Length: 153
Image (cartoon, rainbow, N blue to C red; front, side):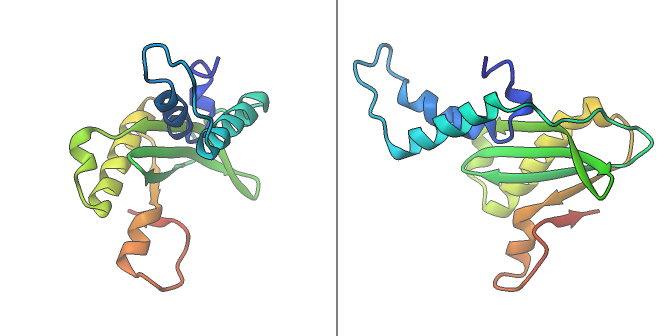
């Protein structure tokens, strides 16, 4: 069931990777239930038991793609303006290729943005899409107050 719902769960790959790593052996006799595994399991269970809050895309409005990279996982939220806030249209979560994992943090963030643009292209098509990347602003001006997401024109 989790694999079927993975498109509706933000940061699915990060949670799934922790659980998969615990059961990598052919037939593990015992699974060591750590705090990290418990947090991943409870987060995934909670996400599966709540209704997805995804909206249908409105092609008269521009899209906004929020991207983050953490521990080799690229995460993205494709959203559009709805009332006074942004409504998610799709969640994306995937592993970055091994070549990207050897890059510095700023390049991993750019690669994550490229992967998320590619994944969101079936929905966005040729419509306007603004990309926001969290890490690039922190790297550009460390120790200063800044908006939580960096605008990539």
